[in-house]
Length: 66
Length: 398
Ligand code: HEM
Ligand code: SF4
Image (cartoon, rainbow over all chains, first blue to last red; front, side, top):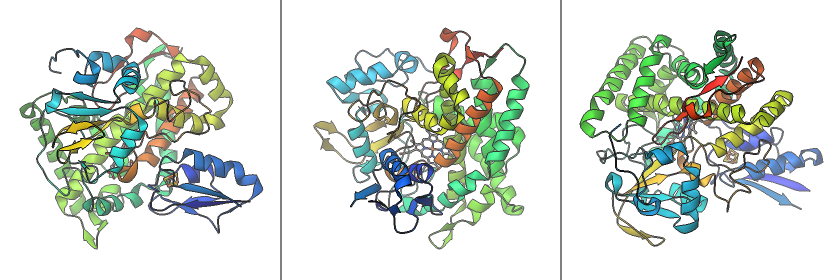
């Protein structure tokens, strides 16, 4: 199983995560990424989660495989 | 632009306004990355140029050793207006920067920008409508240039007929950088007088627009003073126009010279957002600057207080240590942590707006002109200075 999280210390609001994985991450009112729910990534969203991780310029999207 | 001696050696005498750099900077950065990743120049009173992604990132993240007091390399050093600088938040350092940025971010968030998409599309459609039927058009001056000017003027609530004046201000501040201060001041003065009148009008007649919102925005529990708001509005005009125009133009230039990519986007419009990121990476239009805060040895470079750093996000985006095949434009590139909008606390506050304008501008252009190519590749002219994009772009659409 994969979990997605955002390191709010590193996130600067580039918005790649919520564009690429809109079911997993949403923008807050400053445009920073915010995880929807508890971050559990459904199997059909794993590809989106990986894209969000691979496109964040600040390396603020964290994926944890359990 | 003033005449300047040609560059003798890129590692020790670089100049980003040299015609060789303006025509094609990428081979210069490749050469430097291999030999001397941080170049130096005595020009502009002393300047350094990092070319690797790791070095650009380290400087962007290091606000203790580098200041954003001025982000445009010129022949003179700007007065020290710390902590705010002349155009907050881009010229502000921490801790002041955070509040100045926070007052702007909610006004430029993706949710707010989405509301401007339909009118942006309509405007782009009206532009292509005007061009349709012609054989050759200048996609830079007759299309790309108009889009960001119109959109930001509407958002700020400024008269749309003043578009030509905004373009004049922007050109002066961002492209006439080799002129001495005496020649730069009158143009700046004119810009500030124009903005003062607009702000005054908004104070007297508040309305539902970005200028009024900025006048009322919360800056650490109170509203920001007038010169702060004026500086931020100047920044929105200056930072939003040349940059986005350049990104739209460079993308059209690419598509006009790569028919296979153009055809693919016509057939697979869903790929456009991914392609837009790749155009932003490969043709990143914006280079920033920092000033060194104090004498230091930085990774072996003897940096002096007030030396410039030419902070090249475009060079970082072409670093082979960071990107696979960086000089290939791969419109379906999946991993693309590009730094076109900067890194760290100054990440472009207009990035959501810029991305929307770029995507819509390309979508409308491709829809209207599914087949187009460069009319005369040698006639394409690129801007000099820290914002790079085509300023003349004759495209055959007929
Ligand atoms: C493709 C178009 C654009 C590009 C490539 C771009 C690039 C950049 C970059 C690299 C920075 C970082 C500055 C630094 O590190 O010193 C920046 C900052 C900024 N940009 Fe943009 N920009 C674009 C469009 C816009 C637009 C449309 C606006 C607004 C109308 C805008 C407003 C700003 C502001 C306000 C900042 C300062 C943020 C801060 O200091 O906290 N930009 N931009
Ligand atoms: S892509 Fe990265 S920096 Fe941007 S909002 Fe998402 S987590 Fe934050």
